[in-house]
Length: 205
Image (cartoon, rainbow, N blue to C red; front, side):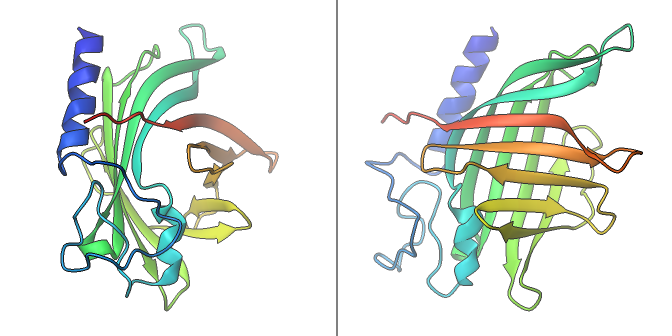
């Protein structure tokens, strides 16, 4: 049953913007077919959008993910649990912003629900030179406070004003990337609580 659901999910994600006969690269701003900004899957960056939009825009597409979370088991011992996930990124607002949709199974002993859904909106603010990010998910059923993101070397980082946690997208290539969520411990060190390994999903007509 779980495999059946996952297959249906992938098909629905692939078909929500129509089928593609070959997705174009997003390493530079697309300028052709500007009269139809959704002429292929996931949309495309707008030529008039801030050039930094490509930073998270490089993640546009469908990704097959393995998510690892450090949680406590029934005995209070920390243990890594691995789950299957899918992550879809696409351009919205005519190519000025980016939306992602996340689905993950949850087999940890403390799972609130066996399935976890989340969506995030990312837009680059040229006045502050930072990304503004808002996330909502299926567990607290509410919008997050506004997060901020920026590019540091070849990595993309997200945090908030507390600076007690950070998310890092790293080792980004055309076909894969890695993600990690860290918190600051009482000793002032960074501790990783979650990791994601993402690979570009194989799309078929």
